[in-house]
Length: 223
Image 1 (cartoon, rainbow, N blue to C red):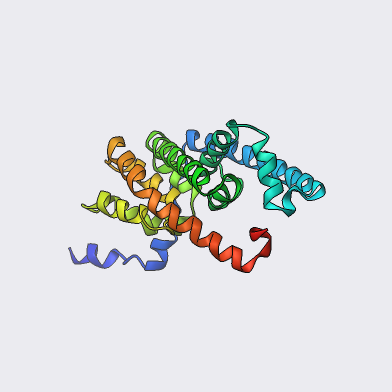
Image 2 (tube, rainbow, N blue to C red):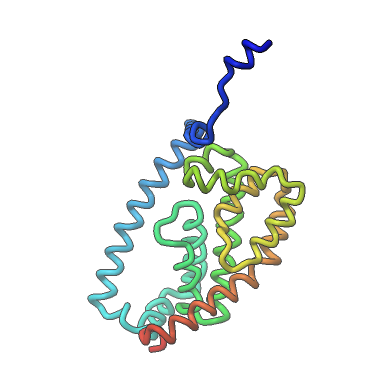
């Protein structure tokens, strides 16, 4: 017995941290490959639109930009909501940028409703995608240190309660939380109730708080 004990060397913390994360499955790899291609095409499209907007003067005045969107008709908020929801799955620009821009582009009421629709659609899509693909997508999408920091919450007996509290916070990592929720035992009905009931308050505080700050720091937002 003593020889067995002496032959077993303790595992150092460095060796534990050096353990490589599990390799993603073919499904997760294919999804990431296509998401990177879509993101690259999105970046090119954004660059073209920015160049056009700067040259035409659309991006130099909020009123001018709102006139262009008004000319697109009632479909503009719906299309914007779908694009904003897609940012949760395939991030081209930071998702917070599309959320912040909605009240600025469509007005405080319609813009907030558009941002709310985009957030709910995107969060639900992430939840369902995570439930279908599993932890492989989480490891492939986020940094290993981030995954290890949050993955342990799945074993918490009150995960749903903490998830609801985090969703209600304006600065919570929504996409990561929704990926984790999809891997948990949370029902889709419970997830939808949390998102639909708690997300509007965080959305309103975050959007109008940041926009108020920008209006004081950047005169362009007040023009």
